Length: 358
Image (cartoon, rainbow, N blue to C red):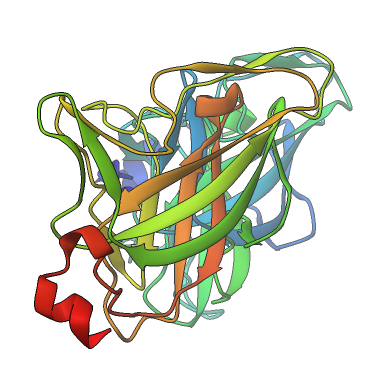
């Protein structure tokens, strides 16, 4: 239900095999361990502390970026076991994957197989084109002896519901000669997504609060600078909501109902995004806020958004609203009951014969 800005799993795998071995390391074997226990390689102990499947919604320069495909998020604790200071350089924006320099995830060839295997069935790595994931280390850090940090590495969701995986941590991170290998027993679970509220909930959205009151199909009364008052020629979905100021300072509410290119409200009915209705420059919907308004402390504004009508089989919709319109950040999502109906024509649109029948 989110907008797809393109999580790109396009890191290129560089199979290095023996090329990653440094001089004198031919007889060495990589350290191998299980998820939840430290695996020591070189001067560093690596430990996979857990994993999640996530739908990402991130802040990017004050705008909310949502990715439509889930990702596998692996949390790794990194501890300096050496006497000298350890410089940790994150690789999250590296587009080319290498067993020597970036974390690698691949299918476990089995307990009897040689690790690392010469060829690997890899899980594609993911880097973010926009936005930053909370918890990911974004800058170089120096760890003294005994100090730790936790970082988060993103991969595509495996096709199998259950899989034995190997996370390979590169020697460039440990100052060793070989990667550290950690067995991860992967089991699919429902991806975590953004919080969805219920209609009628008072939702804090930055300095303001938002409450969705109703969703109904109706002909909308309009006013036109030339033609005067009238009604929409077809019914639309009308989602009514209230923006309140619970604080002690005025807030600005800027709905952007009809601004082209603005980040505005959205409605999702099942897997279908319903088109937002934008009126012509000379028309406005009666009772709807135009432009920006200031909401004083303790006051509220009731407003509404217009969309194409959802299909008959839908019994609920997801209404999504950008908190930036109320001075906040992120997206507010609300599940709203919906019943398809054929609204009665307004009296002004009825023919004389229709009025007599009534």
